[in-house]
Image (tube, rainbow, N blue to C red; front, side, top):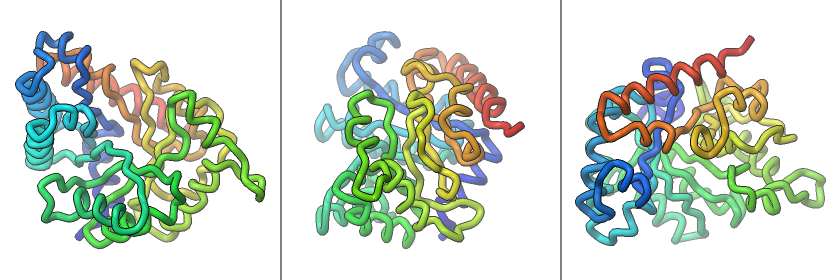
Length: 278
């Protein structure tokens, strides 16, 4: 099967550098005039898929907002994933899983094995039990053409106390994660399949991202405070590998499909301009 990195590279070329989240939190459901219940969840997700699934390179459902409704929410997530895959967009499931041994292998099977009902193109993962603990996830991703986005520098202010801490060799935890992922992507073309999550709000990172050779997911744009222009500050020479991610900035334009499409088009235009190396 074609690698995730290759599929992502083509999708961004064809549809533009944009990932849109599906984050049906209660406030957004209310803004759309929907009830905070399973019916509101389904209607919200279906509207986003219908409006953007055939236009956006990557769509990122946030699993937690589906899981909070129990088995019916998980069923809605399964349906949303199927609809997105049918629409042609790549599906990045935001689950931030991380564990060891048989447990991380089970997580990998849940999301990266094509026989699973929640099979997606890629997932987010936490490396803070050690990057090596995610080995089974990387292996299954490679076997089935999937991708993994590993947390490195996140947008939340609490993250810095861990991610910017320094080890005995003088590197920050974030740089250690970056270096290990860079090794996994070495030699991949046109792009490696193991990415990193680096928040668009973190400012100058002090980290070297030049050798990652994989996609750099940049959440935090829009409602969280970052603008497309901030990407230049955060990523510098690694700009060409950045996948900007918007959620509320685009979703807040709903529920009219044409308004969602217009918001996504504006985001793509802003990101294209910001990511153009000059």
